[in-house]
Length: 327
Ligand code: ACO
Image (cartoon, rainbow, N blue to C red; front, side, top):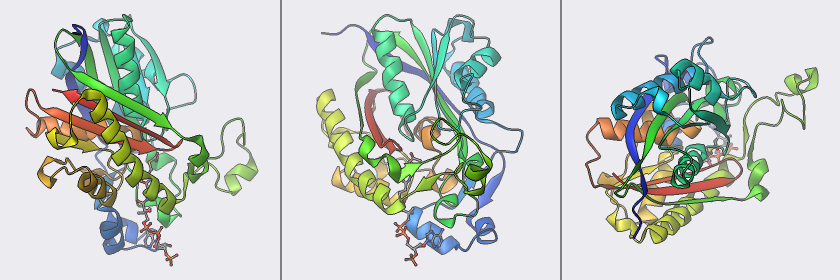
């Protein structure tokens, strides 16, 4: 019988003040509130101001999570920031957050696994603490996708938004994270990519003129992958935790599209009242989506002590990941 577990000690989140509604988008590209709502469930999303960066929201979410956990920044051993929109390629956004928090003894790094980033970071931090790397970790999912979205491409610009969520993890002698499961398949990499700005296509006049610094996505293919993998990843992590998905008290899926969420929940036989949804308010915030939803669910009183939570995500890579948490 295990006597060392990793528990969530506190959650926090932060989103920009500026709201961009479907009506606003109707004035920017050839789209309609009706199309966006019926195809995605999204009604509005939050957009960062020019001076706000991913670290802005990562820091605020982290401060709230630390406050909720009652943990001082100096007590952190590890900071992982999951993001596809770091402030810069280097230094890591985790180091920017570490500096602002004053988390003097923590090591920190960024992790990129598309929209699955937070679940990957959660699993990595859990294993790090379990292996004896320290006692406390901060895991953040943070994005300013508005800065890499092509605002001329109606097929993608209506989907994404900005924000951050964070959790503080600590070593405990009773169950917390029961199981995690991660996977990837690089064969599907070209379905969702940001082609330029790194070693393959370094920034040049051509890459800018060809709009290669923006998200490119084959929405339909990603949709089919997502529906399949959400079910598979949920079933596998439930198997690892020794539970059935019908026992789950709250299902917190990646908030990309209400149709993907509902079809996964249906296949998993999870009733509507046990699904947490906030995609209508924020759109797809990639790595931020699951921790933002987790924090909102907690603050709305949707999570009680002892509840079983199922987190599941999918994204660029292609990647997928899931976790079962006893709260
Ligand atoms: N407004 C109006 N019409 C539009 C818009 C828009 N914003 N965008 C596309 N259309 C049109 C298309 O041009 C197409 O028209 P056509 O039939 O005349 O060619 C029609 O609507 C249907 O387009 P589809 O792409 O087939 O629409 P679909 O029902 O597949 O919905 C969507 C598109 C919402 C993008 C869906 O495929 C989806 O949600 N895919 C998953 C995306 C996802 O989850 N991505 C995030 C991955 S996570 C990460 O790592 C970032």
